[in-house]
Length: 417
Image: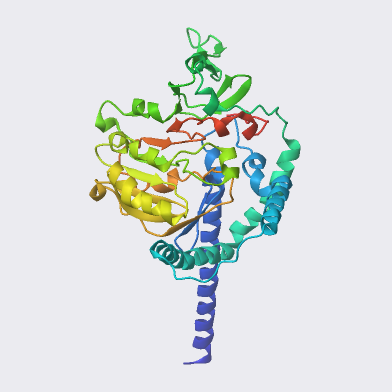
């Protein structure tokens, strides 16, 4: 090989390396651009995805934006940090009996096996997150963004509504919510006539009633001196467990193809009980999951805690009672589907979802992640059970689906749609 040929080959190799670097940079830039618009970032070389709940939720709104300072208040607020540090400090001061080494029982062995299985998955996901430097730069700036937004946002009076308590009183059927629909423009008569602006207002019962926003715009609502935001093309049904049968479709081919369930599992923690009401686990056996699903099949996504006793209850009692079979585990998400498994796309097992935590019991919106596994029904019909907030295109059922829809959870400055 002559010197000239060697030089040409070296130049060619350098160009290939530069091309590979440019391609890698371009792919990274594309992923970050997609994340900034969608709120979802799929991490390389792992079964992990990072979700920014605020960005995902904002896709449901046009004239409003979810307030990052309110969503991430538990994560960033120094008051919460102080309270948690005091709580943990007091906990350490308590005298506890030292646990003596003992042989693990069957339940403890099962829990240990689950933890050993999950540990490498979570470590790999964490490593992949640390390697995503472009994403980390956005996350690291989040605190500054939240602080600047907090200073610019107008403060709204906090009026806590206990929908759970209001729904129990005898006056519940008399409570009404006022929906203020955005101004629309209609031509009056011929094309040369000016446009007429108008605003529609509806007053309807708030409990045991399907409240619908069928428009493609957000709707402002009023209830007992508090204001709320209803996403476009969404609806909610606020009731207790006894009324859920009212959501069963008259025809099975009008059923739901994606059902997300976040039960208020019974919890011995006193602090958790102060945040939201819980129910004995046996109550969830009566959920009419089978009757809610579409004839073509449905994907059921169930949020569970990591307690082995609960996992055993779900797998041995709850799944059989609902008529569903286990399909895959997501961390933090556990998914399963109905008997129509052959009609569904196979779920990739042991996926990891990473996100900055919101308020207590506020889960990240995972509907879009699951949509690719849902039967090909157009459009997909989606419902969330025990919902505490709403999303565009979804039905939200529970005894407080408006909890995180209060206007104080959104930015005070409205954005023009």
